[in-house]
Image (cartoon, rainbow, N blue to C red; front, side):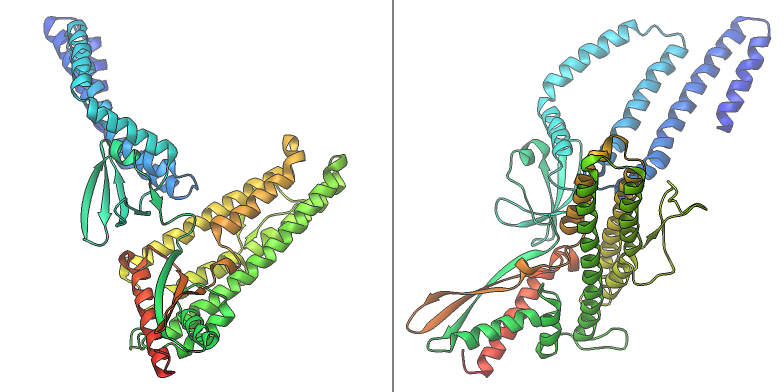
Length: 469
């Protein structure tokens, strides 16, 4: 900016002098220097400032397209800035650009024909951007059943990291867009695992099922009813022992489960309050909401806000101010604080790696930020319904569904371990066990495999002790 100011000052001074060929060309040179400086400044402004804030904004939004759009803009806009700056630079020197523009148009046509495959990949990348079947860091299943992680979507190719072979692969966007993409990270990071166990024929089936079920529930990294998991946690052998720096696997798992139990109870309270709110809105809005009825709705919603861990200001008359919500740092047993206590307890898991700390923190802080934004938007509509008056119940229901499906479910009953007898022969009974592991992205994407292996080993150990195997 100092250079630009200095160049403009010199240009201003030169205009005050008598016009001569030397002054004329000096002004041309100053114009060219100003164009070069402004071009460089604008390119750096975008790559180092605007893109930084765009990335930060993308992390705080629920939308996925902006996570893909920002890297593309980072590559495309600076290049366009330099191209435009080059043409303006030549024009400032007095060069006639008519022929150059014609040549540039012809060259563009020739390049477009010659680079049609690259352009197809580029527009396929834009289609992936619009459809957003995945975002950076998502884990997908490839057509050959290998597991890959989305690392980057470029202008021509998408970079994937293959977990099993520890290598990177680059797939043209057009080829990737034509594949069936199985996103293992959505709608939740929970991943289903299935193992098979053979039990000696003639064994008591109920007793065998009880051993298999209690083994799965006893592992701290599987999903299940928390009270059942706490009961079976201590009997699961073969987990990591405590060290001077870390808790044992059982102690860390118990701490995490107890913290999650508090989160689930708070979520259940909030869900109940939402149901009361929705029911009240449906009853009151039939004849239109008057001021007294609107205050009743606001009171219900204020209870939800307080349970979430946010606070709002009221005026002297006790009416809610239409201002942004802030976090309530005084109350510990609100949802936001309980979520943070939970993922902090999770970070004490001795199996986690260093990068997992950032993964969990970013994931939950982003969800908390989105939650605050959604609650604040619904608050503004409740305070000033306007055209939303007849749709407040739909807006509240939409937020409740988001809490249950995208934020965190208070219960995961349908993800309880499932055990079935899949085959019987004169020698063996084959049991198929399906269960869910808590997070697919942790431990360098190997967490589910480790948990499945430990569960299998523990099942075989306990079945052998009972003489069932």
